[in-house]
Length: 275
Ligand SMILES: [Fe+2]
Image 1: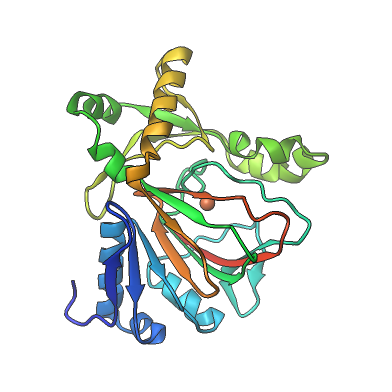
Image 2: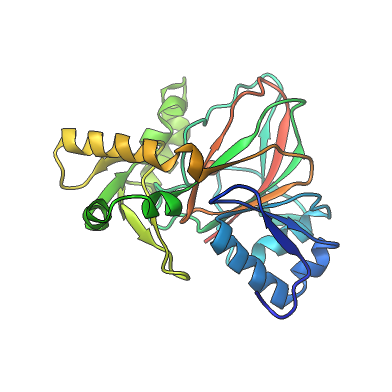
């Protein structure tokens, strides 16, 4: 850890997840030594939880900008006081759709490295989020299996992840620009983290449709095995949100799954993604 560090991290589960406590978030954000140490902690734990991360939207934006260049995508409205922060809102009466395990936007040629979310309005019950360590899942495989997977790439498809939205009335027209902008893309099945060289499995049931070069049956069976393997209980951690809890995760190391058990109630999250 760095020389100055205005926070502490304690493990939340055996293989993934750290809880970050601090006297002042502003102090952490404005101190370069602390931000360096926070990034190191993220690479170590895969996902960090920061309870009571109060402060205005600019402070949340500053925390995100401390992790790297912000990736702006036009699908969500932005906060007026900080356009780098998006607003994710479920209104009362709307059912929540994405319930499958994934890492964010793997349909893109360059998916976001880090995602950061702060809860602002929460349902009275439910709405937890799960994360799974795709790095621990890779480590737990046999050496011959690791060697085989390191040779493979897999296809990721925007249309697969958004198939339910595309099937809605008007969905094809509404999502046509996104479909156009995101043709199918291949990524390595095993990612090597650019900073730590740690390896992790990079296929997910929301967007990954096919392992390149295998027969359809081989691909289907291998993907089913990997999807189940990555999310084995021992690789996971669960967060019950409170207002102003921030979660920061590295999409190259972990996958996540929102639990859609809160019914059609109001929820508002602030989010920033890093390129
Ligand atoms: Fe996500």
